[in-house]
Amino acid sequence: MKHVLRNVLVASSVALLAACGGQDAINPDENGGFDPAGSNGANGNGAEVTTIDRGPAWQVDPLNHPDSPLQQRVIYFGFDNANLTEEGRKLVEAHAQFLASNPSQAVVLEGHADERGTREYNIALGQQRAESVRRMMLLFGVTPAQIRILSYGEEKPAVFGHDERSWSLNRRVEIRY
Image 1: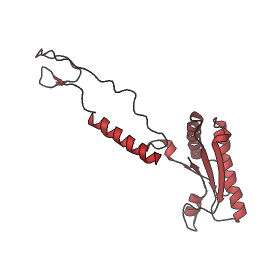
Image 2: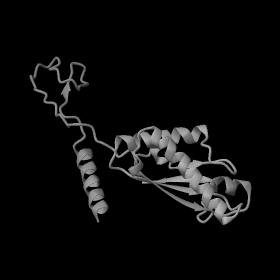
Image 3: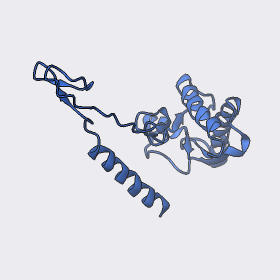
Image 4: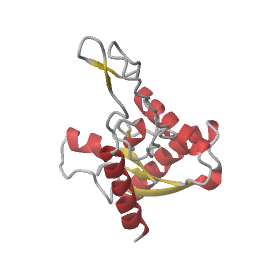
């Protein structure tokens, strides 16, 4: 219910800002064009221009902004290992910096594996992958209390299939806020 109310309030604010978003005052200049700076131009009509201070810029939640690197929340791993790739490190660093800046925000790291190997082995491998992400986040100042780890092993595949492409998409850690 809170989210619905918040979304309605945000949508109303956006609509109000859009309706008020035009130019505040426009004076014609000597060439018949417009003078957005508000000088009097050649006609000397003496119109006064008032600017409106609209306050601080609109703050967008970085977790939901489409251009934010925080939109990417899946870190992929190679076969039978828990080592972060360079791309994975960059993604973990971005999330860690956000979490370190927002100490009240918590995250769940869900470790996954592909279908190869025993159930027990895959649970352990998912745990190792999530621990790898956790360790790096701690290095960037995230507190241990902000991080919870779950390992699903092979139990929750991202895609179903028995080929290398499917397996590579299932070897992952998902970051859940």
